[in-house]
Length: 228
Length: 128
Length: 233
Image 1 (cartoon, rainbow over the protein chains, first blue to last red):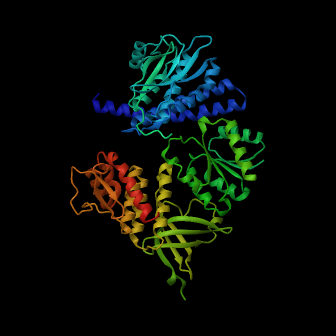
Image 2: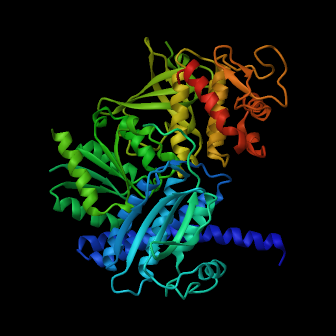
Image 3: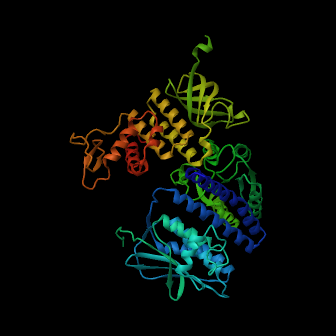
């Protein structure tokens, strides 16, 4: 098959996938609302989580198609708080302790707010559902370094290392469990986060925070003057 | 409590929204398309409109402009309750004041409880 | 008196519609040869379909009307000639369509030239197609400015020198010219692009410019500011 035909196939597959993802939103939303009406919180939570995954996939595709992403100064601590709020119900469902850790004061970071929040929720979602602990912990953290603002999600779950993550990046979409050492799931939230962060020219990598292991990325600090 | 026009093209979703709004004491006139919704505007003079933008034949934006061309409906508040995502370029806030949009709710992330809470707040404010 | 002799027959684009009384509507239309007219469409709301028929938005209709004594004329008949039906399949296109109708309505308070009808016709056709919206909007705004006599100087700078390839510029709104500036945001690439935007008879060709997305941001902002300042539309 010629290269141009193969490329056309890939593009048409992407379009089909995006159309399917869009279509999936309706039945998932129907389930979530019917479950809410019937006071079935667990079903509602599962459907809402699925909806969130579909939305974050569509967002990542949309952002990656843009030739240049418009970044703006974003208060990372505020994004962490919003992400924590989104993850709260899922964390409760999995009996996971959810914490915020923001060290010191730092300037806003240059980011796409929606993409950053979606990435953090994706990371949190995958790490929460991966955990086999009876009482897992999840920390959303940010701190300043010389390179910029580091923001990430850290978990008490075992199995994550840079090697596991790198292998996962090469296997996702091809293997059913690209990070089997970490999770029985596909870990899609982590790969969606990686794509969203790459659209902001930021690389996701394995990092440590207070004896917990997780995934974090460095964002450039905004150069605007702080208004006090 | 209030008479509400619900413009929702999906029957399953509409059932859930209607049930939640009825439980909160509101009268709901459910329509699936812009044309029949305009008839309800004429016949029932609702106090609030809950609007999905993605409709068949005529989209919600057309309905909104048409509705605002009816002097009787000039002050009826509108809640956008839609599948159109928040980062959609068409949802810039420039047109909100012109079209009397009081609230934007992204359906996939809005629970029934949140929808009812917003509707109650708007209808109470209107009554006051 | 033979009523048909007084009837005006023309083609028009609906700019706005407002209800009047139980069954009537007041319609503002931009015509091909009579400028902007205000028409009373009597009994039109009794017709079952309010959103269909001969007075559709995003359409060109052939109309006939009886001139009134004042500013409002009586619509006698209307027949749809061309409907730009693709516009309403996309929320953003619909929004921009309404916005352009509103802008031209504001800009044509006193004007009667047929060029405004042509401008709206080309813009609707563009919206009906696949051209990206920000190019359509930029071209439209530029044409509005041109028709109103407010085209900026794109040939030379404020001192009368030809615009240089290695120079940066800012824009002087009082003189509607570019001025050399070390920290200027406009490069010759922006200015060349603006020449096309103001000079093209329709916006389609703008979609073929490679890297248009690199220059459009500041250009669109500049033209929008001019529009607000000089046309208030």
